[in-house]
Amino acid sequence: MSTPTFEQLLEAGCHFGHLKRKWNPAMAPYIFMERNGIHILDLNKTAVKLDEAAAALKSIAKSGKKVLFVATKKQAKQVVADKASQIGMPYVIERWPGGMLTNFPTIRKAVKKMTTIDKMTKDGTFDNLSKRERLQISRQRAKLEKNLGSIADLNRLPSALFVVDVMKEHIAVAEAVRLGIPVFAMVDTNSDPSNIDFVIPANDDASKSIEIVLDTLVAAMAEGLEERKVEKIDQEPEEAAAAPRGRRRVSRRNEEQAPAAEAEETPATEEAPAE
Image (cartoon, rainbow, N blue to C red; front, side, top):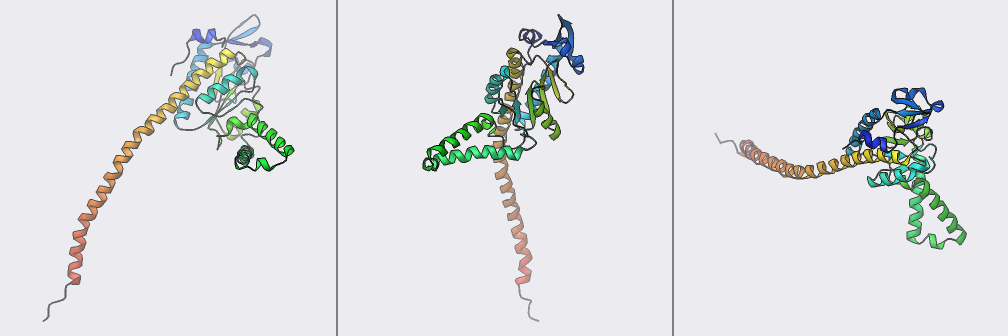
């Protein structure tokens, strides 16, 4: 797991914050200086925080849990979709459906609706409907796919949330905080980092900046998933070898107990000698 160098972060434009008048004072510890009315982020702190977030996400991935990626802003949508797909993680890049976390069962019902429509298509029920009904159902399916298709495999609440731009995704952050789900986020100089568990101070408007952060986090998670896979493979021969040994011990114990049992039974079956 390698963290980007200071030069790489600089080249990607991670240091550019917002105008001084738009700043949030809570971001003061992460601001290096002000230049031409624009705040400049301290990239040394960005590198440290990025490293911490990558290590935590690697641990989550290694334990087999899911992380939900959220980015609905234009610059981040495609990057997030591509990177999250690489490691099989769910993501939201269209409008955040209100209550997605706090009212998760309802969202699951909507996802199941997609599965039901797919079954109708396969078993021929769809073909027996009128043209108008088919059109309505197709539109409904397309809408569900667009908004919820990327979370179809999310059967339970995610173990963590990764967010690009906490101001834009404030509803998602609020829902995660309410449920005690850890939040990882790219936080710019105009945002409030107080509700974020893992703050990554960085420019959340430039696609290059978003990409370099995501590359690092996704690479760390991929490592975690790979380690999980290797551990599973290593465990299988151990379990297979342990099972016969256990059976042999049991059978040996049974053999030892059998003569003893016979010896105990013998006096009981013999008749007492006649006087």
